[in-house]
Image (cartoon, rainbow, N blue to C red; front, top):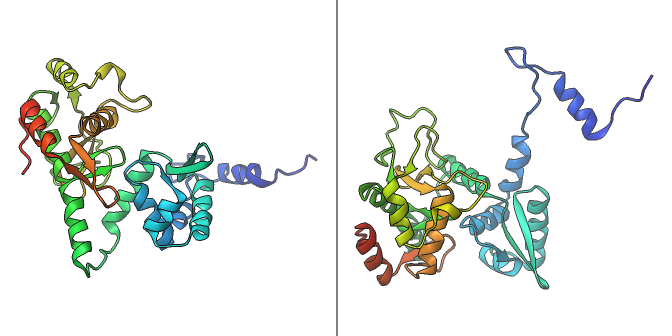
Length: 272
């Protein structure tokens, strides 16, 4: 009689023996508890918040932002990397850490919906909260009031079509705040390709491995903001043009005076 499988193979065999209510094998179960445990530690949660804007940061920077020592930060980062929540990149002798992908950022945004709010006990905390609502990144694209206004301007100028950008909970089937939208489909119009090219965004060379146009239901504004390859490319272009700059806090961005003028001229966007 052959030996019984052990380790992961044994676990896979046992999983295949279970069935759902319709009698189908449960072949692709997910370990939610394991993923949640990686985020559950307050220090790791602060590290992940710092990385939620898509940037790669050093361990020392993350330690400072999380308010922990370098050795403690290294231990937490090692666990996050092992859990495939965070990826590490080597640049010379230094290591930089970033979220493993946009799905991790989306999961963090979704958790924020059910998490109790942190008590705001200082002017600094209040200012940061207001800044996050005004303009921030959602992984690699703009969110908050600025992100919502940008999508609305793209729709009004005929760059995109497919919907009006308004989230209507009573009509939503799969759309939920703080997650990628699934109910609707935006597309770049024929005229939109030219307008985007005028901004320096080549729609034939959008970031690969994802749909060109996606949207998220913004958690603070409860409206749609642009995501996907176009959202990432347009946001990167705005940084290159110095139309937006990073703020002092993680994820916070600021619209520059040059950016306000440029967006008004190119897209008719007035952001006060």
